[in-house]
Amino acid sequence: MDFNYLWSVVRMILLEGVGKTLLLFAVVIVISIPLGFLVTLLSKCRVPPLRWIANAYIFIMRGTPLLLQLVFIFYGFPIIGNSLASAFHMEFFRDLFQLERMNAAFLGFSLNYAAYFAEIFRGGLLAIDKGQYEAAKVLGFSKPATTMRIIFPQMIRVALPSVANETITLIKDTSLLYAVAIQETINVAQSIVNRDSNILPLVVAAAVYLVLVFILTIFFKWLESKFNHDKPKKGRKKRLASPEQSL
Amino acid sequence: MNMIEVKGLKKSFGSLTVLDGVDFSVNKGDVVAVIGSSGSGKSTMLRCLIDLERASGGTIEIQGNPLVKDGVYVPEAQRKKAISKMGMVFQHFNLFPHMTVRQNLELAPKVVQKLDKEQIRRDSEEQLAKVGLSDKADEYPANLSGGQQQRVAIARALMMKPDILLFDEPTSALDPELTGGVLEAIRQLAEEHMTMMIVTHEMNFAKNVAHQVLFMDSGKILEQGPPQEIFENPKAARTKEFLSTISK
Image: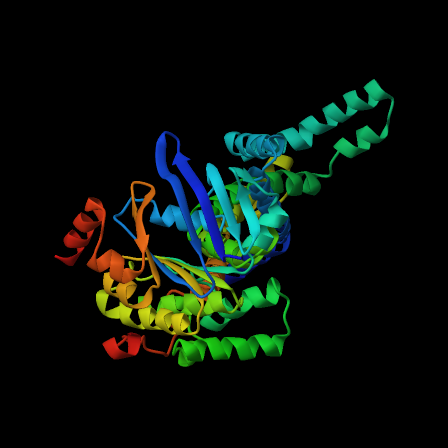
């Protein structure tokens, strides 16, 4: 085994590929989770048209492939922009719809993942007992206070395992960056494979993904333990209530 | 002025009539036990009083403030005001599972009443001591027994300094040996002259603690009076039948 060769492959993948992967991941998480919350709230809203918009959004984003959405945003938007610009004689449409590759990816991924997160959060809301809303109401909490203080924290707890799942999927989905011709981890690995006729770079790429997913897994395990109040805290045995104590 | 005044209360779910013209009033300091078989409308009636369930007709007044008048509800702000001095304890406790016992007690005074922090802390310690759970302040509800959870729920309701407390089958979800502490806490409140309505299947408790007993059947109050009268000398045949089945 040639360690010098291995090292050069690792370096190339880390320097040229992983950066874009991580950048996309970070931006998409930061945008899509709050956006998902917002869509969940809209889909629960009392104004029917807002509900329809939220549901249509989720239907379209989940109903079409992410790859298609990326291609549409990067290659299709400029065409729409041109038509709008000439139709309204406003040049700014041309620039508005002509997105940089990475910005197109940020937009496409964020819109797509927000739809999935919205559904996850909606599922989390469904799991909350209606007694929680009733207790909040008889204690006099306003609707916003009920949502923020009582419902959201419980919803997040229920949603966390699914959010973790979706986040891990996102790490791997970043390889779709090739659709807008951006060099990311797999892309870089593949070009080395072609150059050197050696499959080692693919193994290195796999290891990179495994390490990233491992870190995420640990992080979400820790987060879940923070939100889990069903079990006694570590280091303290659950005291079995003796009859006189619990009366 | 009566604490609770109900006239001609009606409630139906679709074609199913749950409450079919209920009239009663509750005086200050009264403890009213509501008894009757499952499905007789006891819980629905109680839930209508605190605006958790929509009445289809009739009038409800709480401390002189109307909640619904001849089937027409007052605007939301007035409804909130009408029920603001009323607390409720649920069959399934409904504690907030993501908060400690202390946080469960202190959240509403902090967020809703915006009271002073130190005042709230004094209150919560006092209420926990009253239900004998001072040592559980930092536990999460999941680590408590059902009986302890229900006592926390009572303490939480008392934090809002209610004039009226409603109990919806407070011991029905508990193991029999855990009901004692909860009933004791309610009995103590009765001694302090708290106005209370308790939907319950605990006949002995109703007999010993209540000033008034309402017997409900098929959405109506079939009989009401002091416990001696209802339990020793029931007039309606249905009441007799219910009491004899219960005592078996």
